Length: 330
Length: 282
Image (cartoon, rainbow over all chains, first blue to last red):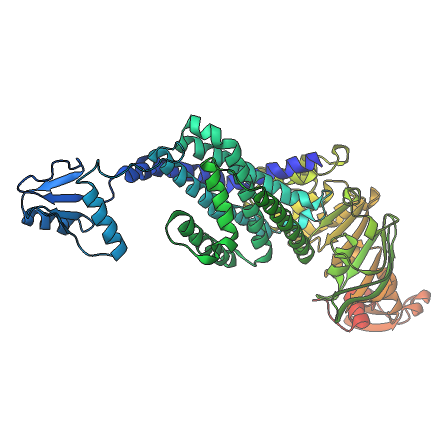
């Protein structure tokens, strides 16, 4: 059994290598890392809006260094014309008036409040800081979690299905039906290759984007969540590849899962958008568990029981579909 | 080696594919299973190779009921050549064979290089990916895959498909050699020449029923009109006469100067198939 599994594992690695899967994974890793370190973190440190102040008599003495002073109302108009998200403050009459291009009402209020707060940066009570993450650490953990989730849900899922479709096309699944090996090993070796590949990806992505010390402390819990998601997605990918006729049909299923499946989860978890039904969305719980892990929060044991049950159930269904496929082809 | 009693099978409740087949295949026999598309040949082979479950009746291979013989030990004893050459297109012939051979015990495996040499595989292509091979070369690699484990029972589905005439002759020679080594061969084919030249016995199957089973020779003899056609020269003229074969016992019963040829009017195996099943093979 061990020898058979090794032969299958080696063959699956060769299939993935010849299909440039590992190269693609390295490419994604480089791309994600460059995006986090050169783009996202810097973007998150930028002030949300530019604030322009016209104060000819110098009434605003406490203003923040983030406030840009203009010398005339014409200059302010020109600045707001070029930067429509910016906020203008006119203090020429002694009373500060907010000037802005109208957008959504709640956003406009936020913009105005933010601009006015920059005139009195020391006013108001400081917010209570929860946990020890700096804003940069928080941003890094959030984006790393999102990118890992995306990689596992979209890229890994696509990879395993592509390999199986290739084998289906070549007819070699049929040959495995008459080889002296346990048929489940054919599936297990694929799961093992993808699991291993996803775990390595998770380690590198976490360490490169969160940092060695912080990342290493999180790794055991992150790897556990990665393993759960990786196995689930690999099994769904196998099931799709076994049940669907060709790669074109699979592409449609992929779009449904990647766009309609993942988008509401990202929206609910990362923005103020809330859907009443999101609690019934399986991806939401998986994503939130991964996110909680990155922020050092405990994950409910019920989640683990549910996740393991889903993996076992999916494996049994995939095995049934595999036997059906062998019978059909053979 | 193979014993099939009252074998039935249905893919769905309302459509029975096999209607009670009965046949045996002896040790060391080359057995031909002939039938048109959709006759139940593949279904029978799937049941015999342990791929398809849920059949009715009794099927035993190597003296064991097939329902209880699906462990690795069973698959170690059989080799299967499929109708199409199913191989990893991105791997070479050698890599494909080494991969498939790795599932069998080391002492059972044949040398891959030697096997490909026996099958007259072009040495230049040994390390090239299968995607660059011709149909005939792929068929040779597939045959090597079926033989690499030295199987005791060999299932061959259209073994000479995709081969040129010299390749077909080579394959028939190799199948004969396997039999001499003690293997039993179960051949499924449309090719009447293969069946006639190779098989000790053939079975005709049509619509899930076994229509006839005997040696190719006896099947043809049973239905022969026992006449011969003689081409001869007499007084400078070429002539043809059809006479009873038995009448030749006393010599040529008519005046002639030279006999050019004598042909029996024995029917072909294909004629027999059509007679028994009422259908052609294609």
